[in-house]
Image 1: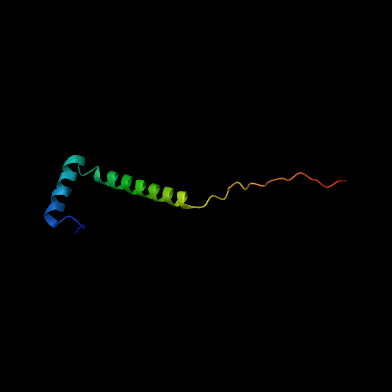
Image 2: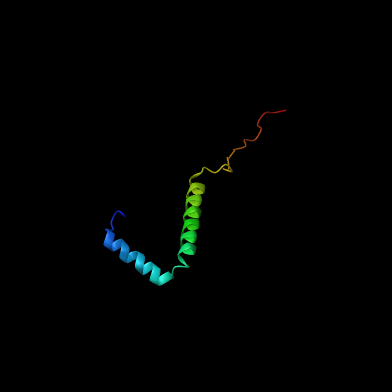
Length: 67
């Protein structure tokens, strides 16, 4: 089933979740977890983008030519 859980262990986890949250709260919980995952992925993508507003340093040299 899940990588580290066998079938009996997964059933126990599902029963515990149902007891803790109740049947009506499971869709809300799943929706909130999905939103959190999407927000996390968006944050990672945003952090990995190179910034386009990078500051470029320009050194101005004084004009030494005699006019």
